[in-house]
Image (cartoon, rainbow, N blue to C red):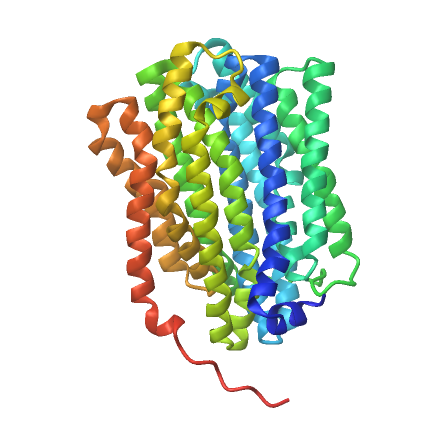
Length: 451
């Protein structure tokens, strides 16, 4: 289906399922691999490697955050320009964005490789724990120039209407990564660095497949002679800032939280936090895939002046987010022991008790998280980076840090309650922002332009 037919004329509910289901399946495949990654490392390599992976992961995500800044930041103006029938400008933004992502991967990867040992020492890790974390981070750093592009390519394919191809590519990436990881860890007996290498290989192969499709010149987006402009770069940075700041602020919070956990409960506390994050990594991507897969359609219609259609699409997104969150809260509350055993099959009774306690408190998070998440996505799609950035930074950094201080007397229980408190305040903030932006998002449709 071509982009105009898909985004502009398909009924909103049908459009939602056409775009959101493949998007959710794509993210589910990634989430399943993320869980498999944790299970393989925890069960085959042991708790030290599992803790090292979790300690390094925030820095790995920071590495991908800059690529997301450019990829998401470019996708918004590309969609809006396509809605305005300015296809040449959309293709120029696409070309420039790809070049910027590769360059950023080289720079950030080099910095992380050089600083990896010092960063792990700064986190309080020592001995085998620090070595495992350093090895894991350095593999991602080396592969950064050829892997960070993969998620941006996913966005660009969806803009071109290749929703199902994007889904199959994500499934392939997860399958390849899981296969490589089983081979490297179970057969070849590599260390934790083998887990990182397996993921990077899967990403690289799929990035090249996506690149070959977009380089063929047959899709709506294809490469043209790049024309960099300061105004274009500012637009990309502004539109990508909410996602980037969310990733960056979230990783800063994770780094601080890991450092606190090392001091409050040592390696076991870090492992409990790792179980929470792996469980969430299965849920959050489903919500992300369901909502953010509609961003190209929202941006396209916003650029075309079809504001009532934008609101109809967003209504579907909010309802889907609420349903996913309700189911997630129920499952996390009802089967915490089973979730824990997925990652730590030989967990001690003391560890199991603490992890079950943490997961039950964590389940409260999903009761309100959906509203802030959906509102942030909405603001990004309609080119309102300031409100979206306010939600993202507050959710990922400001609220968690304030709650760490407020809940400090509760010890580890306060850490686990932090997530639920953050989601509640984010929902309140999101409601205030929707009220603030009400006049703009409720505007009537623009008059149809004559051909």
